[in-house]
Amino acid sequence: MDTKALQDIGLTKSETKVYLALLRLGQTTAGKIVEEAKVTRSKIYDILERLKNKGLVSYIIKESTKYFSAANPNNIINYLEEKEQEIQKNKKSINEILPDLLEQQKAAQKGKIAEVFLGINGMRNAFNILTEEFESNEPYYAFGAGKGENIEQIQIFFSQLHLQRIKNKVKSFIIFNESSKGLFKEQEKSKLVEARYIKQSTPSAVNIYKNYTIIAILTKEPITFLIRNKETADSFKEYFKLMWKLAKK
Image (cartoon, rainbow, N blue to C red):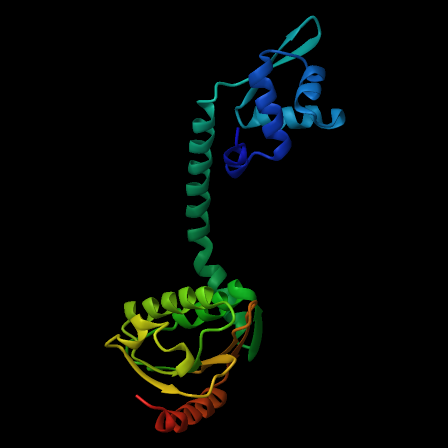
C-alpha cells in the first residue's frame, strides 16, 4: 500500500506505521505494536498519544494494562475536516492582523535601499513587491528578457508576472533577447505590451517600475537584486530608452 497519502495529510512516518499496524492487529498492547510497526520502543507511547489527539487511536484499560485500537479509517475524513476548520479559523485571525503586519513591514523597509533574493521563490518574492504597486497609469520597462538556464521555470514565472500586469492594465515595454523569440508569445502579442528585440544575449533580466529596479540573474537557481531608489530607476529608464532605439521590432 502507498502510505504517502497518510503522510501528506500530516501523519509522520512513525505515526503511519503505528496506525497501519493497529489496523492489522486489532486491539492490542504497546509491545505488540512495536513489533509489528518496527518503531522504537521508547517512542511508542508518544506516537500513540499523538494519534489519539488526532482521533485515530483509542484505548481501554484491562487489568492495569492499556489495550490500543485503531479508529475507523473514516475518522481520517473527520480529522481532515477538523484541520480544515482550524485552517479557516487561523486564516481569519491572520487576516485580522494582516494590516498591522504589512504596516510594520512597510515601516521597516523605508530604510532599505537594496535586497538580494535567492532561488525561484526568492525571485517570486521580489517581484511580488512590484505587483503590489501596479497601477494602470505607470509604465513597466524590461530588457534582457531571455530564456535563462531553466527555460520552463522562467517561462512559467514571467507568464504569471505578465498576467498580473494584464490584470492591473499595466502598459509594458519589453526588449527581448532574439534567442528567446517565441518563448513568451502571450507577452509578445499582447495589446498591453510593446516588444522589441536585440541580438545580444544577456544573462540577466532588468525590470523597472516606478522607483524600483529588479535585476534577475537567470541561472538555474536565480539571484535577484531589488533596488528601491528613484535615481537608480531613472538611470535605468534612460538606458532602456537608448536600447529601445537600437532594438528591432
